[in-house]
Image 1 (spheres, protein in one colour):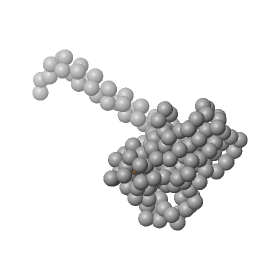
Image 2 (cartoon, helix red, strand yellow; image 1 turned 90 degrees about the vertical axis):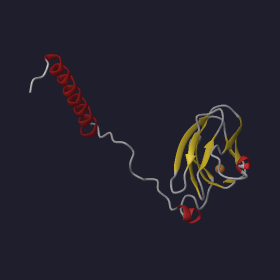
Image 3 (cartoon, protein in one colour; image 1 turned 135 degrees about the vertical axis):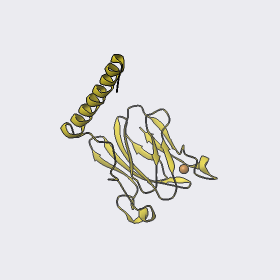
Amino acid sequence: MHMHRLEKIWLGIGVSMLAVFLLVLGIMTFGQGIAPPNEHVHHIDPTKVSETAPFDKPQLTKIGDNEYEAVMVAYAFGYDPAEPMEVPAGATVHFKVTSSDVVHGFEIPGTNVNIMVTPGEMSQITHTFDKPGEYLILCNEYCGIAHEMMKTTLVVK
Ligand SMILES: [Cu+2]
């Protein structure tokens, strides 16, 4: 079969690009251990949220020097704990959130806190609240007829 010289050069470039790609992929996978997220390591049975720790007691806990863990459950149409949580200014809060029914959102406007809360999964996000104030926590995934009522507050003193 006759092939034009430029065609052979172009094929050579294509084959070498593929070889470079596979080499980079191989180094990242086996050398550095980088892999796409594929394990449900934070799995929780969505029908047993109220019996499964730590979601059987949703609460704000002090876990270190100005460091807090907020275990929360999102449900139609609110969050547990429902009463405002209070932390001092400069506090780092680790949010652990799950849903006991449908998909909800968890957003604190004005911060980078914005996660999707899916039944069967524990969503996690950490934020440091430097400025005092009242931070609104709201649902930004339409979840039903009273979706707009779904909110709670974090007070930073
Ligand atoms: Cu919701």
